[in-house]
Amino acid sequence: MKLDFATVLTDAWTLFKRDRDLLLRIAAPFLFLPAFALALVVPDPPMPVAGAGDNEAQAMAWADAVQTWAGAHGGWYLLAYVTSFFGTSLFYALYLDRDQLDLRQALTRCLRIFPRFLLAMVIVSLPAGAGLLLYAIPGLYILGRTMLTGPALFAEAPLGALGAIRRSFMLSRGSGLPLMGLAAFSYISGWIAGAPFMMLDRALREAGEPNPVALAIVDAGAAVAAMAAGIAMALIAVSAFRRLAR
Image 1 (tube, one colour):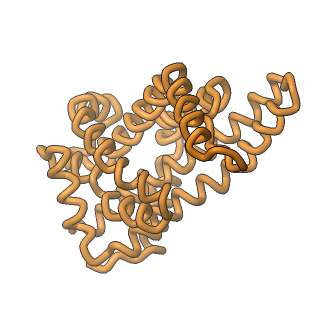
Image 2 (cartoon, rainbow, N blue to C red):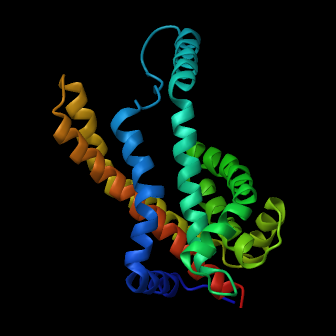
């Protein structure tokens, strides 16, 4: 079946309008709070500094700084990402079970499937993240082709992590470009919405002792943008899966 970009977005928006209250109750603890905590209290990882001098020495110094940062803060990033993945998997459990579960039942089912979902997301994130870092288009294409992994795990259980990834590639055959566009829409929209808040956060911190209330408001804005992008990606994946799995 040919996938239509606008139709999938319309389906996702319809789901959000219908279930907005429930979606936001789930997203608040699992998507908003982790992003807010990271922005507010965890420093960004060190970035390589371009400039004159010994490039090898600079690279070693940057690697040491990243290692030090990871030892001090990497665990918090890992916890935040795992929590966000759990919230996303709960959306899938709600929308993609044949028995139309309520929230309590969906939570129970989600706890049972989540280890496989998390493994699948880790496997997918490695090539997608590398593609996004090296050149955006390959990373976005991988995100698009693997977008249906989570929905397949919940809609077609029992599936293993690798089986769900294979199923996503199978379902997305012939629809790679529309799915890449949908992935880009979610990813880039979230980045654009959050970028002004992160710039303000950086400016406040670099100016000296920032006002904690102002900093909290700015970081809350960044977290809302991240939450909105997470909800959008999940609902787009659900809508695309329903159309391609018919």
